[in-house]
Amino acid sequence: MSENQNYILRNGKLQYEVTPEVQKVLEGAMYWSHCQKLDTQELHIAEKEGSGYTEEEIKKLRFDVEGCDVTIRDIMNKMDELNVPNWVGNGALAFGRDNDLRNHYMSEFFESGKYSEKGQKKLREIYERD
Image (cartoon, rainbow, N blue to C red):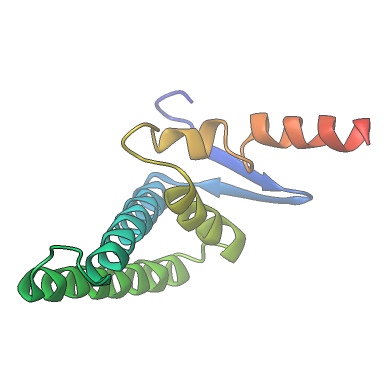
């Protein structure tokens, strides 16, 4: 993507142009859904009997998971305000959950994810083979 060009996402015949403002919101959705996944996983481990976590640590993890939930709801409200299609917002949330953002760049969602031009081309090739 050039400096002055927005990303274009596609879902079948649907198309959506991602403005810089929307891109920041979608990146926030990816980040917080990733954090929610990690915190939830750790909480499940901590709540198991004999985990070695203190009650205070478990309480903090619960608070962190709830904080992620609240933040994600706020981000979803912001997406609604910006008229971001549900498939775009849900796709960003799923990307954050499905990819370890410590090993993946968020730009992959826009450049090579399933809604990108490259991702759509891969899907067409798969459908044409079947």
